[in-house]
Image (cartoon, rainbow, N blue to C red):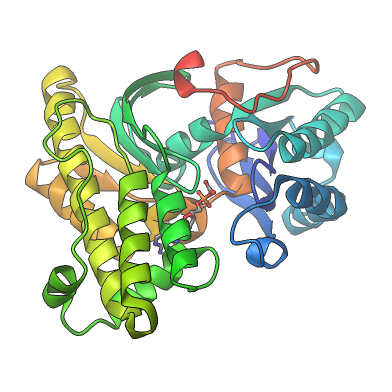
Length: 346
Ligand code: KG4
């Protein structure tokens, strides 16, 4: 750990333009983020072309602001880290090329970050989580259970075979006309439901993969079931009740899959002491609460990043850069953007 190491992190893989600065001790010196939600809202999802243009319009200014927040010039940076994938390739190219340009102009190292690794390593910034730990990554584009054995060392235990959990929240919310991104709206509507048990009887939903031995997830059937309820209910749809039923089902699915993974993890990695959640859906309070309880029951430490570091952000990219910088895992300027980049490939 070295306070003199200072790394700029750039994120642009989806609909957030972000720049963060972190030093070698994990002090956050800047955390700037611009969300494009308004630009994509009318389409009910992220439009890649619009996302890329918005990143292009805002990236330079945002990096400048982050540098001002930290009170630093580019010549104070030790290295620049930028997301190189996975994600929407137009956006990834913009952040990656900005990072490479700064690195080249200052003659400092460039570090190409796997966006999923940045989510995975965030609990080491916020909570000093030691390797190995079990990670549940739940976001708008990903749903995976992984053992994080070290920087660049991941063992995937299971992942979604169709939609991501956040995608299911967002698509279900769209069917109910809730607003975008729908996850926070679903949590809010569900909290207004006076009788969650009755809601589940009114709008029963399947719990996909329940009881299956493998640790994969599936959410497309759940989304279809929500669509059927919306269509059958028509004008008389009780949104609070359907949101409550959906959120409870999500909690059940996540807890059932994760408890199986914990059994495997504690048996296979006796040195492992922690269970960690990350990604935008980790902001969901009932899901966080249920997973905290599950971790406690299994005598594992539970870490969930603060809400502002659950979703995409520049600080997590900078921190992944710090971890890699300390291990001398640097990249050359011809590193490509990778729309698909499974963690196991690291
Ligand atoms: O990690 P993230 O910022 O980026 C992507 O991978 O896209 O996650 C965004 C996702 C969206 O699907 C959003 O609806 C979901 O996280 N989300 C939530 C909540 N807050 C954000 N889902 C459920 N409950 C929430 N409170």
